[in-house]
Length: 93
Image (cartoon, rainbow, N blue to C red):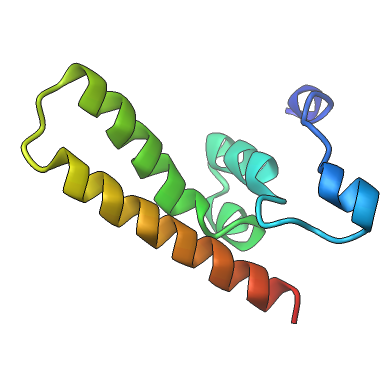
């Protein structure tokens, strides 16, 4: 999996300003989930476990008629934003 890490995009915020952005760690966390290291993925970027279901649900709602799709997508999106903000604050304290 080292070959995949060579193609990850660098964080421009970190390069320009010297500190992590709210999305730093997502790519590495996604790769860790793909490798099966779920605990390390959570510590790397906790929002990965709300963003993956959100992405799958959005994609599924394009192809399937889901009764309360908008409510579920909104709930997952709000939860994701909250987790991203809280983990960013905790990481920078």
